[in-house]
Structures are given as structure tokens and as C-alpha cells.
Image (cartoon, rainbow, N blue to C red; front, side):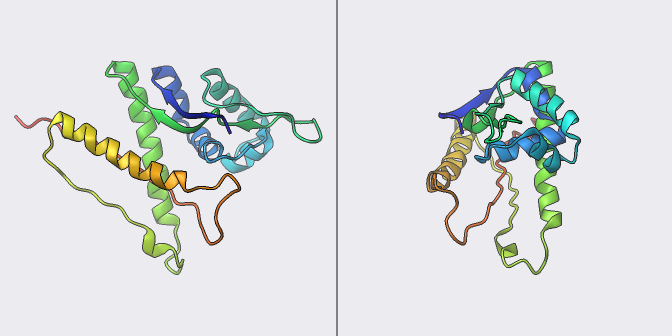
Length: 185
């Protein structure tokens, strides 16, 4: 994986490039430390290798993913993430806002689908949770809330070993959203 800690995407066109569900699936894996070939990415996303190659090149164009060293047999060059995490920072412009909303919608849908797909008899079902609340915060407090929630995730992320997951661990997806409600008139 890349040595940079975070890749921050602000360009509306790059954010829009992230919104495709097949790209989202692959980005999830790459930013979780996997190095995958186009064929492996295609299998994950349910696409043909040639269709997936198109999507991978589109993501590469925006610096969202990059080529890794050649595979052992030299026939296919795998892909990797250029950083440990991906941060979407949509701008207040119309295009940036629309692209950011498309990305949020795609990401939220993926997490909601995970809730629907977990088996009732899965022993890890008891850790599944979704919390929704409304708070009255000023602008600085809302920023602080988002920062502190991210710090909690980062604290657990730092516990990961570069040698792979600890015995008995399982991948857990998180989604943090701090969204201001429309102003009341």
C-alpha cells in the first residue's frame, strides 16, 4: 500500500469517478491493503476483465489508485491504493456538491446492503449497529464531532498489524456521517 496516510479528493470530476458501484467495491478492497489484478477486481465487481480495466484506468487518471509492481509471472500488473485511507472533501460548488452526494449515496447503499445480507445466526450479528441522532451544535462543535469520530476509527485502525489481521478478527465496515439538517425558518 502507499506510504501516504490519507488521499484527499476534492475535484468534483474525481469524486464523480468514485460513485460507480463497481469502482466502489474495488476501492474498498484496495484501500484495505489488498493488491489486485484487473481480473481479480473484475471478479469482485461482477464485470468482465476488459470492462474492469476501463474502470481501473479511470481511477488511475485521478490518482485514486496506482499500478503495483508486476505479478510474479509478469503477465498482469496488479493495482494498489496510493495511501492508507481515502477522504472525500466535496466543495460547495454545484458540481462538487452533486459529485459528493453521488458518492455518499453509493457508499451508504453499500453499508445498508451489508445490514440486509448478514445472517441472523451469524455470531457477529450482535456487533451490527446503526445509530441515528439529532444534536443541536454550533459550527465548531459539529466540526469537533466529526473530528472525534474519525479519531476513534483511526485509533482502532492503528491497532492493525502490518502482518495482517489478528487471529479471530473479522473485517468490520464503518460509516460516519455528520450532516447539518436544513435550516428551520
